Amino acid sequence: MGYAYLTSIGQDSHRFLEGTLDASSNAIKLGGVDVPFDRQFDANSDGDVILHAITNAISGYTGVNILGGAADKICLEQGIKDSRVYLAEALKYMGDASIAHVSMTVECLRPKLKEHIPAIKESVASLLNIDPSHVGLTATTGEGLTGFGRGEGIQVFVIMTFKAPADED
Image 1 (cartoon, helix red, strand yellow):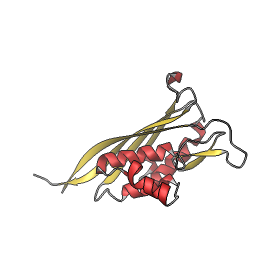
Image 2: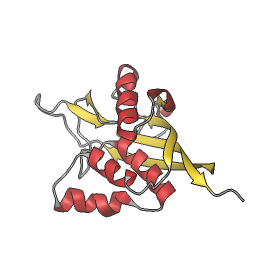
Image 3: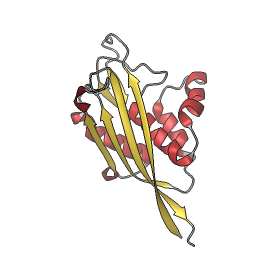
Image 4: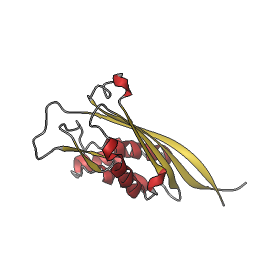
C-alpha cells in the first residue's frame, strides 16, 4: 500500500473585547497554552484562534465542518468552551490518515509571542500526537497593515500535511 500526502489550510481570527481584565483573568488561550495578556477574546468559546485554525485545516481535509457545526452544539448547548474539545472532535473524522506536519503563522501586535512559542509548539504537538519537530510556528505584526497588526485581535493561518493510505494502481 502506498501513501498520498495531502495539504489543507485553515484560518481563524478573533478580535479583543474592549477594556482590560481583572487580575484573576489575565491570560488568553493560544494553542492550548495560557498566554498572559490584559484583554479577552470576543468569542463564545475560549477563543483559541490557533486551535480553531488547526480544527478548520482538519475540516478542510475531512470535509466535516466542526466549527460552526458540532462545536456550536458543544459550546452553546453543552457549555463546553475548551477549544481542545473541538479539535478532538475534528480528529475523530481523520480515518486512517495521520498528520505529518503543521505550520502556523500568527498575526498580532500583542501579546508578544516569542517566549511562548516553544510551549505552544509542544502543546500543539501533544494534541495532534506528532513530534514537536513537525510543528512550525511564526509570529508577525504584519507591519501594522491590518487590524491584527494594530492590536485589535489575532489572526492565524495554518497549513497541514496529511499522510493517507492510497490504493496503488
